Length: 117
Image 1 (cartoon, one colour):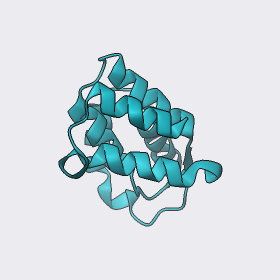
Image 2 (cartoon, rainbow, N blue to C red):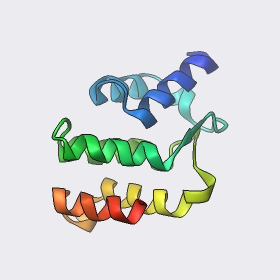
Image 3 (tube, helix red, strand yellow):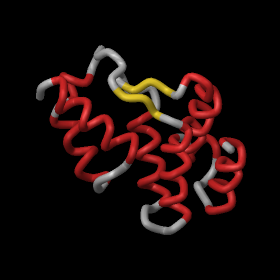
Image 4 (cartoon, helix red, strand yellow):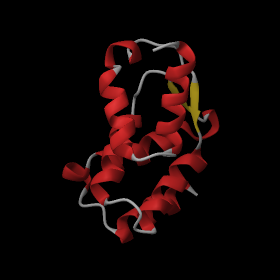
């Protein structure tokens, strides 16, 4: 996988612009090439907001939302929007850890959304 392909994959991940199963499979297939890479893609606050809205619109499950956050959180090659690094990191942790932070319900995700905004 070349650098441009890695960037496209990471962009798909942060935007969730194709089915999560496909993105997850591509990440697993290219795991070795996705380690210790420079930041290529920026995760903006609006990207996190948009994925949470996809969940609230019932287009993805709570499990998918959690998996998405887990795939993004701390991923080499992705940097968080500088101005909002802490709130993005907080929300990704909460979304990726329902076993610690509680089940991802509409109400809880709306609380996280309010925190982001």
